Image (cartoon, rainbow, N blue to C red; front, side, top):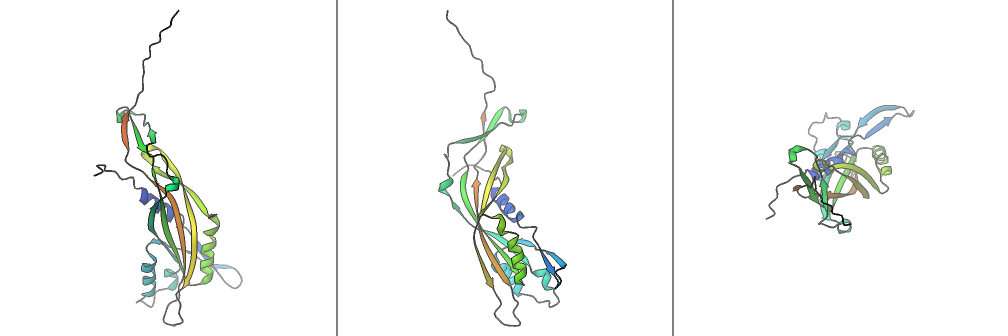
Length: 219
């Protein structure tokens, strides 16, 4: 029906952008004297919370070290919705002149992008409450309540966009219920909303590069 074949990898870029923000978090374990005895990098995976929780509860090899599995972070894109408050005139064009002979003197253009809000869920899994508070304090201060990142959305058009990411809600859950055979896991859930844009196909049009104008004067 639409007759256009294009793919700008926009959603993939937004997912990578979100994950990159949290892929270098560390926690420190200290002894009674306050000296650091262990530094652990928190692994980050793209997965729903139910899948990660199920993996935590299944540990057939009793020799596995707990520190290998926890702490851990996971995130996923949960839904998208159109944002009419950021809509611009759809017929406005974004133009880009490559300025080379490869395009045959044609200019590239796109119509205005469509604003969409993308929701992400991020989960923090720890065994100790101190680990969770360390991770939270490395995240929360940067969201007031939003953090803005710049992304190279459409390189072919030279388009870069500032993408606000809003921290909307936080909640915690303790899965420990008192059974000594049940493993304890503290889970913090953080809800984010990314104010993103989706772009249509890139088109070409002839560019006027020279013009001859005749002037006449009257005496």
